[in-house]
Image (cartoon, rainbow, N blue to C red; front, side, top):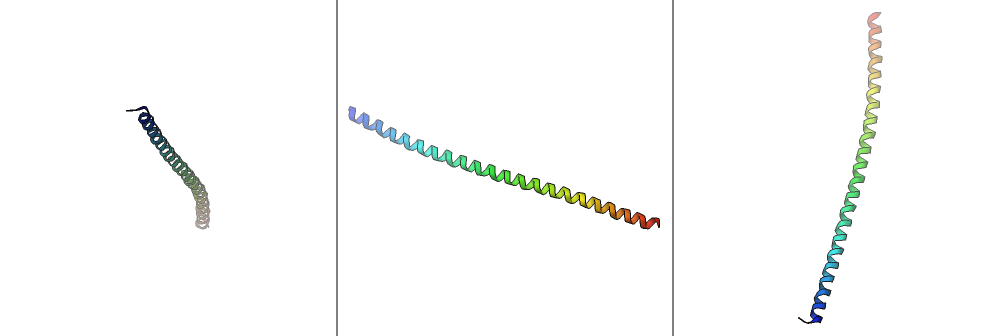
Length: 80
């Protein structure tokens, strides 16, 4: 094999390696982009869950107060 053929093969291998590296970088970029979108979606859902829990707790407190008020009214009616 001549020196020119060897250099040509080395150049070909370098081009293949460059293409593989570009492809790898593209896949990593895609993976990390998807990971970031997934994290953002998770944070959005957790925040929505927390907001819902706060609202539910406030409604439970209001129901307890209404229940106590009704119970007091019923007791007052029974004692008359």
